[in-house]
Length: 408
Image 1 (cartoon, helix red, strand yellow):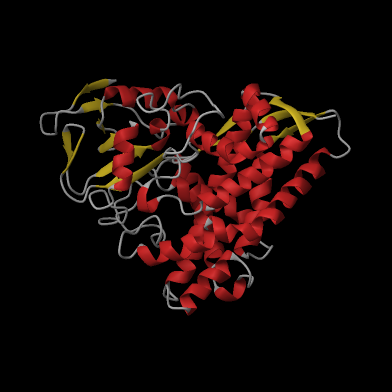
Image 2 (tube, one colour; image 1 turned 180 degrees about the horizontal axis):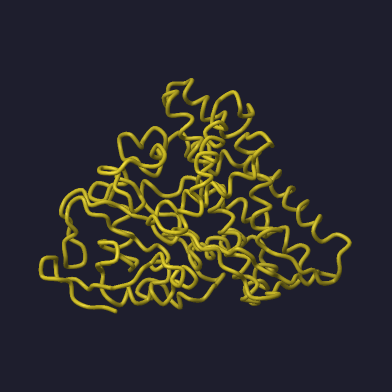
């Protein structure tokens, strides 16, 4: 229900909805449309929040780190008044000048040039994974696209690239799931992960130590940057932790999104098979279309005008990335998964100085897996309805039944 805000607040639309309810998490699209239609900025009384859902306002808030900084937390909790459950991220939850050195170090380690050494290996790993699933199978193979492909491939290549030991890698997904849940309210989803928080946090923290990491991975490169004085020795393990927190779940659910898009849009799969060089575009279009990361918060540094109203200083503003990525004010036919679209400019990775530093890693993983599939699979289609996995921040699948028709 949309009403008018009380006179004590600026006259902005009030939308009485819980963005973190299970009903909305199952299908956020109707709520997102209502928020966009209500106005450029709305008030959510359920959580005493300001919110933006249109592309222009979301993008503007993301890039304006001076007036909407991240250092008070990118979740609902305000670090100026509440103690975070873990040390703040030096990438996501810091602003210049504290953000600059960690960002520069990780950008060099995860940039396109640095990733070239991994390209052949990851493409070969993808071929091997797909061959293991399809060799000797039939002309038709049914599988869970999440477990067999979307989760299996990142968990196969990314921990090796970081330099993690083999033992305990199964902790990465539940830790990431809780971390993204914790950006939202303290609801049943957070409570679900609470019993393992201490155990998982201790495991992740232990993996960030120099002596635990292999000497040829991303983690060792971060520690080498501290040896050169580019970051401090105290910052190095926190930067490694950022990789482990946000580097797996986001890619897993991005791969789930692109597999779902290709299975439900046969024309897109035909386009990709004919033009496999479009694999990275397909992955980016899926990130726009499904927006695995649905929301992030900022905090107003000063009284800041947006959309004809003023967000008061020290108040949280909720940015609906998923809604912005389907805003018809910016995108033509936004609900369509379209490989002929140019999806660049979507906000699924964020925008501005806090834009996802690992996006090139995710694109490379997506390109490797999709290219391997195009060589073996003539047609891909849903085998049954997918099941959603509810998370306060992410749009995700718990299962994605797929039917693969193999090429002759």
